[in-house]
Length: 567
Image (cartoon, rainbow, N blue to C red; front, side):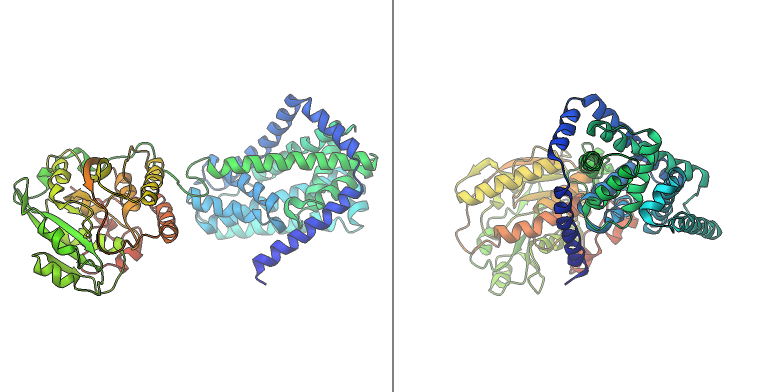
């Protein structure tokens, strides 16, 4: 059994064991009465949760003072993600989410995030132990035992030693305002005590502020080593014991404990879900392109000035075992378009038939990739080859005859006239002679997904007929070998290149077989879309190293530039 599974099993066992123990001592009538009081006092609920939120606002503020590079929004969201994690994970594993959240979303170095978190969490633990010892030494001794004093003394010594060590090391990027941390920790726990204070009122008990702070401190201290998710069972036992020690009836005390814990859980899960998304980027990463993308220089520049007047147009055909159709497609490629020579190129992706010989016999230049690497790898190779040929514009279409090479000028005209950088031939605004129903549905669904992701009015996200300006082709990145369609569009739109669609004709292939299988396609493409959305955009010649080194590892021959070129 793995450690992860063992932890979940331990948490589940603790949770299952806690529920019967609670149920056996629960007065359902008292609990329903407390719930009725809550429903009748929405303003009190809002005020209580507002003060509870204020406790985390204070913690977030002191964290930003400790780590000046950390923004307040990211600090507050990380605290709430961690809080929610503690309510669904055993052994308080949500604490780790506090670190990972600011590392991933705020860019804080792991060492700095971890060290600051440990310092502040130790201060929190020390604060609750000191509060419990100061406000109710007798009660703490009754609940924990005669050696209860060891806990605050040990925690204080550990924290002081840690602070001295960190100051001696002069930890870079971190400040330690000891007085501010101490005041914030104590103040936050006092604010949190409003939950137990208000829950006692709803349960029919009278509890003073001092007693509420004491009960909160004892309850939190008892949960430091809680096993079950949310500390269920441990929280109720500790809170009930503290309340009974203060003279409150056991049934009322348990009702108060359950009510307070339920309110905290409601807040934790609700705020945790919000914190996963706000502020951007969300904990799950960016799921859509920004509403406004800064355009690179090419977008405000006439593309016609970026190449020689006699620069050719390169049309390349990615091909894998297309001997039956590739010759006919090449024969239909126009010799010139818009006064420019057209160079037909076939990128052979490890065909095992006569595709290479047929393509050469038909008059095309052939790039042999050797082994079958995938359509995305073939497109990368074709783009790099076209740039090396000094192309004024680059286009590609499938070698299976589904797209009409005669329509090449329609795709490259917006580019040569300086009106677009990236042009996609849309089947759905053009003419479709035949498309299988399930493929039409799949294309529509995937296109809708791409529209949502890019925030652009895209009508055909999977078209196999596309054209690029020279600068656009040089900047294009295809981050996986399997396919190119979605990631290429996201990449270029994120870089600010101007997108345009033109209507084209489409005929379903009459020979060969498509490589697309829905299950594998989704498994390969969806993770790649997520990586593409969350990849940094590199601008300038220093970015040739690429945002994903694995791309270069798969390249054969000259690769396209991995950045926006400097002008």
